Image (cartoon, rainbow, N blue to C red; front, side, top):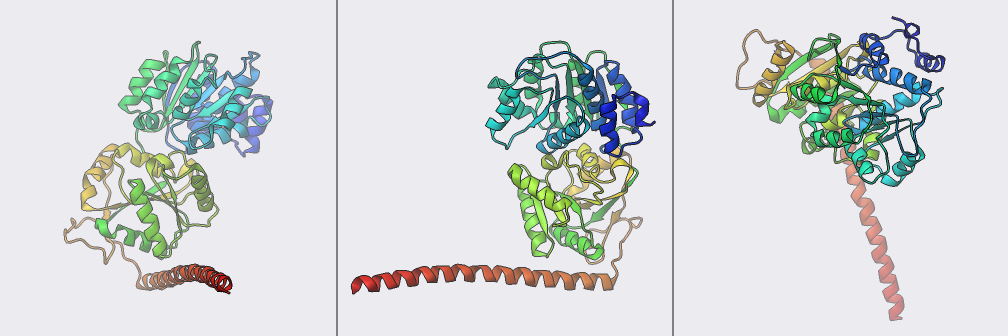
Length: 440
């Protein structure tokens, strides 16, 4: 279906077409008419299928056509997201789509100073994108008024609940006094999501565009069988041998992410970090370096990576499998977006078998365990599992490159202390000269 067919205002249609949109995705085709008809909605679709535009376009269209005004720090529409990165991404989409509309939008999330956000909120906004925790802080300080909200969107509601935002959501919902339209979008329909939907949605319409917990058919998924202690070595080899240029790697914890990034650098592979202990500025810089090709690997945790929108991301690697099987779907959804091809690889050790079994049960598929020569375990695998062969010439070429990168890194490290010594020596010599002068 063409974007012209849904009856958007001329200004909104102009902005949408300037983004290169020609046809609606399935979730947009089904959700937009229901939202415009005023229904509450519970919608599920795979990551990368256009969910943001599905709720943003009809809300912006309604706000632009409405003659209702609200006082001071009041809002007319509120979009809640679980993470800073997703909030920034959605806010950017809102700003792009509303370029030719007389609407003011903004975004707030943690990790940024409050005064600037307070000033923006009190100046008045039509639509706000926010993370629950930071918005609750502003609400308690009376910097924002939610009593006039007409549209409430919960984006990636399953993740918000998994992250423990239920209490914050309940307090924010209680602050919305008048009748409003509520839209819940989620990658999966977990039991928590269904329970919350029953509490806050009024006779909702339900959409399931793709099979529940399905992964995109455009993503090639592989499992590599390897011991835990040799995972990093294998990852470096796969990146080097295959010359992968842009790889998003998921680690289980912030500590393991730090250790992995450090190890990859020692192997001559540039890597940056994205996790909760990093400042928002450093996370933004890491994402920028990764997207512009300055570094080859972005090591992230689930919380930080949720909402990352990277065009044409070719590779996702699960260095550690997620604790929740549903998170596997979210992770590999970072690649193969909007009908494009992608590759998702999981490095699995014997201790990961339980998690892998849960993932296989969830998506209804059993993976082959690929064993790379030189990384065999004492524990044998059934005969039906495949063995991947790395050509000797590729392997030797990678090792030569790795050794060269390591020598450069070591040379750089050795040069740094000498500078420090020289500075100290210079200071000491100055002190000696002063002492001699005083003695005279």
